[in-house]
Length: 179
Image 1 (cartoon, helix red, strand yellow):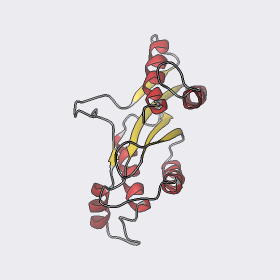
Image 2 (cartoon, helix red, strand yellow):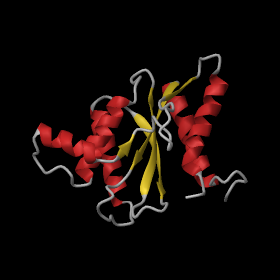
Image 3 (cartoon, helix red, strand yellow):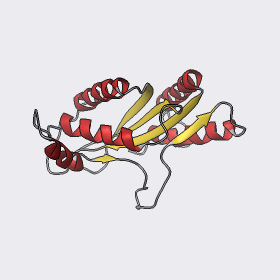
Image 4 (cartoon, one colour):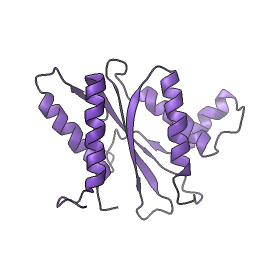
């Protein structure tokens, strides 16, 4: 079902359920968005095997580091030879105040999943491969202008409803029909 604003109801409903579960569990939720892309120099199979592997590894690595979270991802295909993924992660705000450690972990794991890091690679090789792993941290819009990433919902905040609306609007980007 498509909403009049051009959003897919199934994804919006999943996003709403994710928000409510995270708020219920954490009371203070921290939303992080990332886009996972593929290198432009080669074609990747149009399936979800790599994103599933990424999510398994990212979840394991982040939970081992002490972070519990919820997530939602969607596939998008535009005029590029490869598709890409929009991902939203919702962490406990009491445990995380910044997007950057999560983005760094995502880059390292995405580089490994894409096969850019050989097994038992040295630290320097991993760092170089991370630069080639196209993980967009969403701190700039498509025109290169700064935008906020890392939104918060605090159930005890006086502007809780506004925070909730802002996060839902932000999350609804993943439900757009256009691509």
